[in-house]
Image (cartoon, rainbow over all chains, first blue to last red; front, side):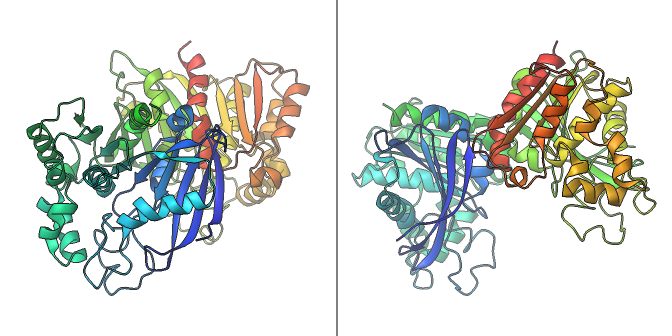
Length: 293
Length: 293
């Protein structure tokens, strides 16, 4: 799993490096990711790791370029990992036919349908493989301090990976935040299409594993740190793809108050990176509260 | 010159709007630009206008997405105008053959070569036409308070438009800043190719009008406010396309100290938007000193 360094850019006094490696989780395909390491990181001062999951059609680059995270991350001394959104080059029939399924749309699940299960394992790629690969590369990261966030499909990924890591007792992430997440995917077209495609058991299988609104009902009041922002002018929100109200209601019904689960409706913002860049620093500072505690 | 609104995005509480109009300066072609207007702008509180000129291959979008200007502009209450970098669709033979000449590479000159002179008039487009079009649209902008900045080719544009506006007595801009500007274009391949193409008199014609290093020699100590940043890991700097030292030397020889002309060498930064985003807010605050004075 040797890491090949493809490029490096100095940004806010730290380094953003793009890497490539042969991914076991993705069936042996080459995978790329970006990693921002702040200037204060060193062997003697390993820094916390915040993983950012992107939305549909994105690569590891979009949020690195447009998310407006690095000023805050440099100030807080936090590394940010940007994985890709799916395997690339699997060559599965139909995988490039849709913008919301297949390439660029891995939905952060481990596929169980035989057509997809060899390559489409973004859950394992993000939660297990990438931390292992980074650790093997002896980068100045403290893996005991991780958090996760994401946008849209990546907001779904961040919420479900976080909630599952609490439910399983692994507690990989200290906090989660999301911009315009697909918060109840079993009840929206994007999620239904993805789950019916990737999972042999379809939506029934997804309900237990990959739906934030369902997962939070099972937590039994285990402590959580969750922040969600969505915009009222977001067309995907308005067309019922995001359903943050369902998640919020499930959280309140499960006994979580607004300190533990904060869902903010941001007036007039849309689904774009302009929305995300506005609140990007705020989300990094939110995670710093827990990563540096 | 009616403005057609193509899109609008809320960002940092303000609005970024993309417009299209039929441009007289560009020979009747459609031209697009982006305009950020902060939330505090109104008919009763017109805000200053900062024009941003992009580099080679860019459109009006790149820096709006990646420049990291809006947080600072919102805080300072400053509007930012993002013009395109050339006419589009003139249909001149060869205009799309190079990435550093023709489409996406207007170099902020008024072409005098007959092949280009009908359409390639970005100087007039930026300095005269766009302010007129904005004024006619009754936007809440105070045109008596303008400044200008840019990146690479746009840094060249910003410096030369600023210096010429002082030399001509028009004083359109209160301050100028540039990221990695082409600071002495008559002495670098990019500039020589552009001037030999667009100008009937070639480099000789450019020397008097379009070279920042030459222009600053003529100022006779007229007061200026100039900030330049470039990165030491910038490959275009290293290959002699930017030549900021020539500009700096000319400024010092002309009697300007580092308060009036500040040229900063930024260790390890490259030519990318990662460099620019790092210092983007800093440049906006620099201009605020003069725009809000």
